[in-house]
Length: 359
Ligand SMILES: Cc1cc2nc3c(=O)[nH]c(=O)nc-3n(C[C@H](O)[C@H](O)[C@H](O)COP(=O)(O)OP(=O)(O)OC[C@H]3O[C@@H](n4cnc5c(N)ncnc54)[C@H](O)[C@@H]3O)c2cc1C
Picture (tube, protein in one colour):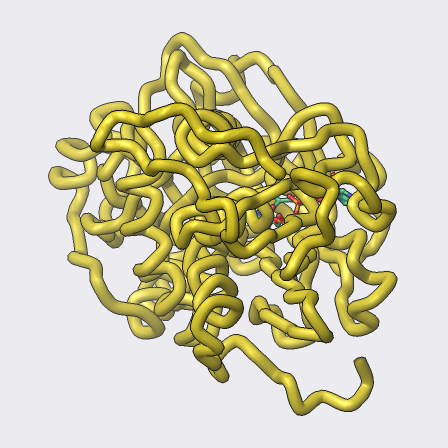
């Protein structure tokens, strides 16, 4: 039996009841942590098992953290924007420091047709001229004549956000986290040693052992440090071959991302990718040419063939996977659906394909 919970202040959850649903989450990336939150908020007794020594250090470690459902609408299916708006609202309440500064989409003069094409494929923006761009981002003043401003979007620092969410889970919801343990060998790992009622598999690409159609899409990124540059919001630079984005991380740090390469191997950042990412940053502002390279990173995004994330259910296991480029944008909304499925049996056909035969 679990030990009795200490009394908690009125504004904090009281902790799970003794007869609460027992849930085991495999994996402590953005999918696993948001699922732990969604189940714990519904009163479940949650144990999360992470094979590394900390949460958030898989693919989620390398994310840019753009919460940009309108911008993603340009290239993603409508369901991504739908999940994205819900998740945007979640992050604003779940973690501190979510700057609501919107996002800016720019293109060099020769690529203005790309800007017009981008505008045609999405909504939620206003056209901005050079003066307005300079007012929004003074350091970009005089460099661009036209852009798109998505004022209702936001961004976060993924590493800080997942660390904050982990603290919330442990301190406020009494979620047990077991580190350096393999969730597939979970006997005795659940709270109180009783077997879990529900297992939520959020192992990212490692779940390829059971999700046969999961593939890897390599993404590469850099973190630069510049004393000269200042940006308030993510800036996307359109380019026919290598669209990139720059996300301000505070204290002169900028995340530059991200390549998207059909490749299951994590490997290292290639010279070509480095050239392209740095070239785009330099095109945004030459001050990035003088910036220090603080970090070079690569990981492999888990994706299904149509790049749409899925919930799948087999027996008492729910798989939450295929987050592709939309881990932070989609995970909270998927997690809420996973909890609704387990607690209420609520189907969510928009992200489930239970009639599949091959799995
Ligand atoms: C360069 C780059 C930039 C990106 N930018 C963005 C962005 O701006 N916005 C956005 O929304 N998304 C972005 N993404 C995508 C996002 O990072 C992924 O969609 C997301 O991280 C996937 O989360 P996950 O929890 O499924 O997987 P992961 O983060 O990989 O988490 C899986 C976890 O499971 C653990 N695990 C695996 N096997 C086991 C086991 N047997 N037992 C226990 N634990 C196990 C792993 O250690 C890991 O911690 C980006 C990705 C990359 C690579």
